[in-house]
Image (cartoon, rainbow, N blue to C red; front, top):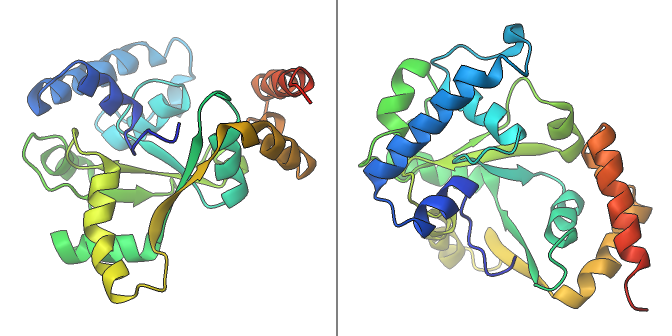
Amino acid sequence: MADYSLRPTLLRHVVRGGLSAEAALSLERFAVAEFQAQAHLHIDASLLPPINETLRWWGLMQHHRAATRLLDWSASPYVAAYFAVEDQWDSDGAIWYFDIRRLSDRMRTLYGGPSSIDAHEFDALYCQPHVAPRIVLRKPTHRSNRMVAQQGGFSFCGQILRDHAETIHEALSVVTATEASIPVYGRMVIPAHLKPEILDRLRVMNITAAALFPGVDGLGRSIDEFVRAGTQPK
């Protein structure tokens, strides 16, 4: 929805619950521990990450629709458009964009050095109440078929209660002010009444659930899209 800011699913939940950073981190640790304790019942244990590699566990949880601190992104504007229009047809949608190189450069300038994902440093850098609001951008080395199809990557913020949009604005508004002609970040709003038409045009380009979610789930979602489009008033 267009009125969403850049809040990962976990952040939306904890904000609604009025949790402090300490309570949100405790809830996040519990969620990860519960997922780790039961994942082997559904996924081949040889495919599971080492227990101390939190970021890889977040990625696995995100893939299976658990609430995490991760935000998904796509390098393709067409894939981004699909996710902006594929549901909630009674509300406006939005496509957020930013210059990944400039944002990475600004994170280094503001917070120093390359972002670390070393398992031994991760907790101290990103899982404490009072850490820098650094946004970390990652494209996993080992990608799922969905990530490949969606040209996807993800980001997360060191501060668990921090809206990505706030940090991106603070970091890149400086760049925009000095190079006003270059759009380095922003949001494009898609009116609700245009969503079905845009989805139909994307279908012609093979940007469909069947293509973006390889497997039977994607097929089912694609059929649902077709039925919804067929029941729209002309």
